Image (cartoon, rainbow over all chains, first blue to last red; front, side, top):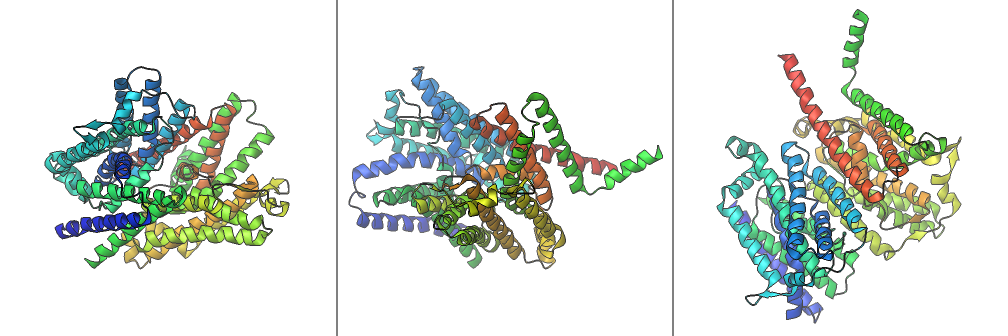
Length: 310
Length: 330
């Protein structure tokens, strides 16, 4: 089992290195500092929501509501800032709303036994509907400019998004590796019944997993608003898909309870680099979607072939 | 006294599926009665005809989902596949190739379904992932194919499939009824149908009794894709345009119609007949929300809430009825 893990991650790293080489040859603008910062800025939102998605997947489920919640939380934060009620209430409201949606997901999935994709697909449409209603279907402008520090600022000489990404990675590493909660989540994902009989509070842990997924999505929503300097109800759509891609490429396999923080970080880097590189090569947004879709399917096919070999 | 007892006993002998369908049908009647009391515009011939037409279109996109759920799967790609099949079909129709348009729509739908089926049936990729992937791939291809624009204005011959009437009944309604009958027979009277229910209720048992599970799954998604292709043709003919962006909510609607029609997420229970009732319920609710002037954004919210409620109720009643049988056996 350990062997699989060890061989899996270098696979994604190799693809990442290849992608960087190809894009560097293909575009003069790829291997520059400003583009690297660009990738980090875009990648941070993806990395954050991927941790949430990763937790949902590790617990044996999936969270399709991430993208819609990104939009909803962002719009709420945007409206509060537009009303000049301050940054702190905006950030707070964004996180609270997203966490609430997460716990609603968790309640329906863990407590009532609704299949995760049905529950989160339903809340996705509910959250998206709400976001459109609240924003009156347009983007929310006039947000507090100080919030832009989150995407443009520096802390200790490090760009804030990068600092956030590192911080989140450390928190999740500790959560997954060194807490009884992390051990429990892996146990649930590996074998729910066994976890239940060995005393893991399955319902509570699983509910919390979706709650955390919501919470981190609320934080990511703030980063997204700061980066775009506006809040768009549709801004987050598709992020859940990229997050699945990250998780799959990073070696988190559905229903096996395997994979970890390193895989997610490498996966997020790979997907962000591929997106950025395709942009620079002038590949249209529509084809990018197809490419990301194909990467996921390919990663899955490789994984399945790999498992068969074992 | 005895006759009523007999009657009650008989009622409980009615197969479970019909009981479920009867409950849903009564729910439909109740909603209709309430709506006709609330809005004077509901119970008019023109409105009801419109509702049934909407329901028939909804049923058409939900049949594929019904079969996917029967095998404990799901097909989230319905909407995108309809968009892709629609634009490809339209590109032939506008050049005057009506027959080619028909064939192209069906072939594109079938190809997408085949791709889903291969991934799910033979590579063991979870249906959520495979079809969610297809959702984006097909959408991306549809947008790329048309450059993001709509293809519109078809000749009347092609549009007849959606705008024509037969004996005063709109053609889509007749097509949906025919399709429902065919699929009902497929589900109940054929070996494939029996195998679908077997795979859905207990995959391991089905495998050990010699059913080729992978092939059954492949065929289910192939059917689902082909039905999407067919639905695409009816949709573009009706709209007189093929837009690469249509159908983003079709999957949710289809899940709603299927689940409300009594097809369970656990697989092996329900069928296309229930889905027709489910589609009628959703169409009536939609229509009611429209008549009450609820905006589409709120409708999106409501449909999501209705799906979640329906699935939860389904689970809760099942738990209760299981508790009931247990106490009975004791």
